[in-house]
Length: 88
Image (tube, rainbow, N blue to C red; front, side, top):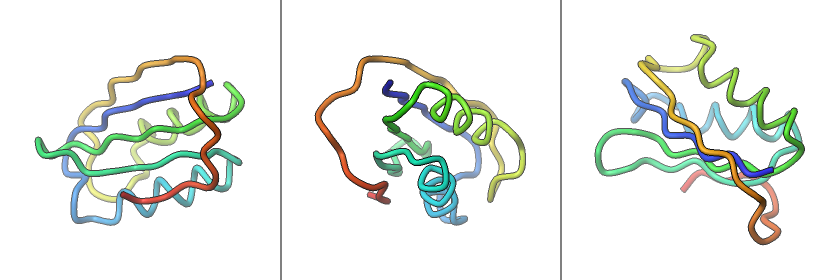
């Protein structure tokens, strides 16, 4: 599956992308996390649905760097074959 999540709150400049990358790699997911111009972080992760759902739970879990005020998600079919998980 492919999970795209937009995380809003105080999530830029606090190590949020690094933290997300670490959690995604622990779950065996591929993809990226990047800052957006409006202050959110966009997370795109591909892998087993359960692992993507676990990452989504972590993003919403409250134990992240900074402060998460909300997460909007979109599920879709995988695209391409990304390798690893990177901060963009």
